[in-house]
Image (spheres, rainbow, N blue to C red):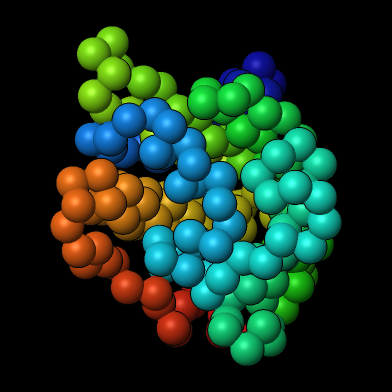
Length: 192
């Protein structure tokens, strides 16, 4: 019986938390400012088209923004509210109100997104980490579904971070931004 409890605990943990990181060759202020500006999302996201601030200060505690999968703002979308902020270090975002996903467990999902900014000792690089923590649903069937999609979640986060890295470094080095990973117009999560 103890083996089952330990297995379920480990399974729940693996199914509900994902984290990816990238090292950016730019000052902390540049990384923090770029990531906190919702207008920049259209440059780096491979999954959503754009983010629109809808209430409060963008990127600050209490600020709410809406993420749109498509440029015409149809189908998949969700809201994000900044819950916690440690300037130049950490931002915690609550993701909720998902709409337009073919699986109802995705539409009822809520997450905490963790953005961490770790500056190197020489202040020349920043390790930017995005983590996603599933809050609900947490029933066994939903956990299986989220575990099934966890590899794709990691892939999307990783590509987004690579795009962010290139966007910030190109500005810092005063060279043209060439996006490494394009917006994915068709995605498995959109299919009905």
